[in-house]
Image 1 (spheres, helix red, strand yellow):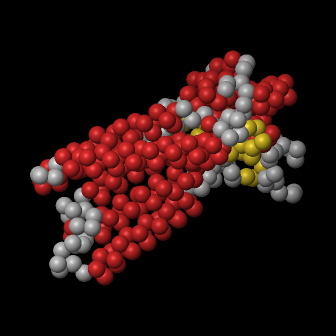
Image 2 (spheres, rainbow, N blue to C red):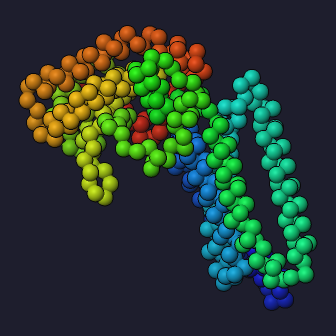
Image 3 (cartoon, one colour):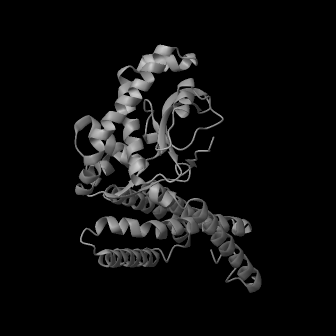
Length: 365
């Protein structure tokens, strides 16, 4: 990179080189600040996905840096792009590091785990430097081979590095509750009658990439009604039946997804201002009970919602499903939090992203 900006040549201008370096670092740090501010909640709710994605970004940034000697006239552009990617990756690494270390600190020895993680990093950094020096010594008699060496070594070690990070994240079992983890726990509780451990949920959750989720029937979403999507009449009737003691309500939603404009039926959990952890758990539990009831007659309910104007018998059936789910809720909720705590889950709080944190408020008549 120094060679790309002219350092070492008789005509190089040190001030120009310094200006280029300051510009690329300044833009990189500014991007890091913007990225951290805009994605703050995702570091908790989608930790593994964000961590692995930024690791891929970091690897690609190294590849961009390797191109700077080949295109010295575009040094500032290439170096700035690479530095922005590195700064974003560094921000994610620092933001998620404590949560990853905490998942391994089963004896509350967070300091020891963090220290050992630093030792591992330093050891592998030194091994990498030794290997680089050895390869340069072996290729010192061939200028062409020495110039091609990074492009040969880079893809091999990048693949090994990303594979190691992916395998490492699979062994990170987070005890904090998010909407997706809580949904897995509650669905297992309803279907099989037990609370899965963090390790079992982590295996099912995976990296939580959008394309790995598949298309679920009646997906559950936490948030508020989207005014851009059509609101079914059943949902409007549910809103009208709200009481002051309700801190959440469940309704159906019809959303249009993707470029193909596919219509998808889903369940929406709307939280009221002041809703606490217990209210969130109860709301998601009720939504999972409703989904189970709807899946028993999946084609019928999907057809009825497509009609847009349900008959009175359908309205009665819907409110019967809601009331049945509330009865199941009263039976389950007393044992649920205790069982979750016993299984190793941190039940004091449910981490939600920015869209899921939106609340509704009741207005006086």
